[in-house]
Length: 561
Figure 1 (spheres, rainbow, N blue to C red):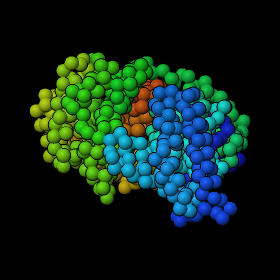
Figure 2 (figure 1 turned 90 degrees about the vertical axis):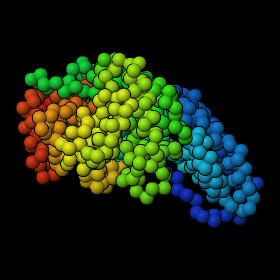
Figure 3 (figure 1 turned 120 degrees about the vertical axis):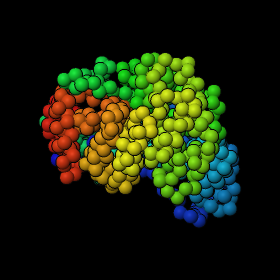
């Protein structure tokens, strides 16, 4: 049996045949000219035919899609017939450039122009580059980029997935996700967890498997096996039964002995919040407010912001909603707030730090939060991302007070914040650990890189020690200030037990993970969770920490987690 070890990022045991994500279209050689047998007229006709075929295929897919996926496909289809794009390519062909190279260069020019226009037009630049690749693929007679279409369910295999790749990903058709690259905090991992799809990342070599190969995917163990045996088929059948049991959370996060561990949801807006409330989330542990800004090239007004925030607050009347102020920067640039030319944006002006360079935006956001809270029944808590020092925490708390916000807190995602949690928590009322960034900063490992996946896991004992130090700091000097976890670590049922044992008060995750985490927490007492936390901290590596803890949690195997 051929096996491919990787990193499990979303549990589930699935057997199915694979479909490979088409490889990215390579750039035609610079300076490529028309061949002697092809005239400019023939090349132009071939280009128009290819563009027409791309348009028709995208239009057909749009008719069977819905929501955001339908809108993305329709916009991309229109771009395939864009006269500026095709005329630009036609002029290059007339000068002797090959059709493939002509559409490539014309696409680059149009995309750059749209990008420079900013705003909505800048967003269309991506459509142009997508269409360019599709037309080149059509000219070459090779599969177009994007999620492959299929009349039957399949396991999607790729080098990695970008957020745009998911526009038409249908969970009814895609049984599981497997990637050769990426890491446990990559876009693929986050997408898989949000959709409830079993997934394994950083499984080197899987992108060489042939379409139609039958495989067994274990999203908890992080493995892919070709030609499944009887035991694996039985495991997949058992998972199909257990999956239905893990679909419902009763709204009561607790250990076996009744220790309360409220299970909250991570959301990005009103629709997410309503869906999370429908899945019985006990509140919101992370409201990512930057999602209300991402489609804007200008700062929204205080009133516009307040309306967006209130849509989340209203989904949880009487319940806790933890709002994170703008985490702009790094992979979430905002034209009116961040500098896209920073040489190292992950370590640059992002989150709370944007108030250093663009003062006023954070102040107005806090005003909008206070305005939305005034007309809401939610219990609103507000925290700043990328806090590094007690001085910054004190300044943020004073800004909240000035705006009329009574419960300020901080994100702990910079190691210095964990190490100095005692002094930081003298200034604010609570902390929430962002384990995604805390891990990549503590381990100096980009969370998107597959080769660093073994470093970039919150099971690293060093990361768990930082969590423990934060909890210790929250209890110093007789204080008992709440500490939550809102990073993806909370969605791992085994790690959720460890975090509870370390003293974390609340866990926040993608809403689809609530039931699984709740089911496992209810199998251990608080004392047992504390023993498992000590066991994980004593491990010499992340691999052993995870293995040792999982071995002590038989419920994981029983539930297929």
